[in-house]
Amino acid sequence: MYTQGLLNAGTDDFVEDDAFLAKFQARIDNEEKIEPNDDMPKAYRNTLIRQISQHAHSEIIGMLPEGNWISRSPTLRRKKILLAKVQDEGGHGLYLYAAAETLGISREEMIEQLLAGKAKYSSIFNYPTPSWADIGIIGWLVDGAAIMNQIPLCRCSYGPYARAMVRICKEESFHQRQGFDITQTLAKGSAVQKQMVQDSLNRWWWPVLMMFGPSDSDSTNSDQTMRWRIKRFTNDTLRQKFVDATVPQAEFLGLTIPDDRLKWNPNKNTGKNNMSGGYDFGAIDWDEFWRVVKGDGPMNRDRLKARSNAWDKGAWVREAALVHAQKSAKKSQAASQKAA
Ligand code: FAQ
Image (cartoon, rainbow, N blue to C red; front, side):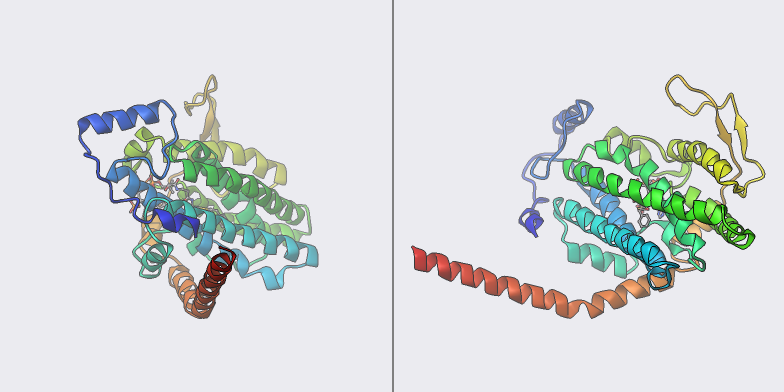
């Protein structure tokens, strides 16, 4: 992997004093991108490793709920689209692992942390997908929430993460539209189909709102990551933007968002430029959120077991790839010696 050359990137020989920190912050405030070989505060490096690796794990674990439906998609066309979508998520995980590697952590270490239950991944992927409608709702809402959260990450201060996010966001927009298309087909279909998609919306709505993370008052990382311009908006701001964008879509589809307290509030200050007004919505069950984050959601154990099995079963592929790479290197070395 090209980033392996950066594995010693953490052994910095600069002094992290006030002058250094002020200069670093000035670069950030000036919208300069921080690149892998630049000096950076240890806490900046560690917070990026934390966020990017969690993000990568989310993409990889996130393949499982939808992967569950590849072999059972209702038509060949839907199967092809879903297969491509799930592959895209795998690709996102790989770009993100590569971006995290530029900070001096190896992919093996990140995967070990995931499989040992030490690393987090998004709470949303610990919910089951018992019906085909869940595939529509995941694309529409989970990818929709992911886009809302990730577009600002395209402007993240760390270059490799920002650049990875540009491509990821383009692909996520396609994912969101395919989810909307499935949802729309079911919502405009028979009474049974409409009920199936409404049931799915009822199950996913609140977990999707939780994806944005704890409320700002409980978010331990936001203040610092916003100062470093890793995050550009707080969790609550993005959640509000998502609700405001999604409610009219649900109305268009003729679906009911399962929240009795959802109501347009023309005086709500949502922090948008020159605009006021936003939806008031009901209370999120934060106990459920923390239970799921801590490993006790409906599917946490199954998800980790599936990844652990895949890692064990893939050992021979990793070994074979390594031997192949060694053989190729030897061959090209011999060829260049012969030519010299
Ligand atoms: N689940 O202080 P904050 C996708 C943790 S990708 C689990 O607010 P932060 C694509 C958080 O880590 C979805 N844990 O944290 C797709 C922290 O714990 P720590 C993933 C959560 O980092 C679609 C603690 O709570 N997206 O969907 C969650 O500033 C379909 C305190 O929270 C990203 O990762 C949660 N929902 O803000 C794939 C985007 N929320 O680490 C397949 C990048 C919070 O201190 C199919 N990440 N925690 O021990 C971010 O933007 C941020 O990391 C947040 C959390 C917003 C997720």
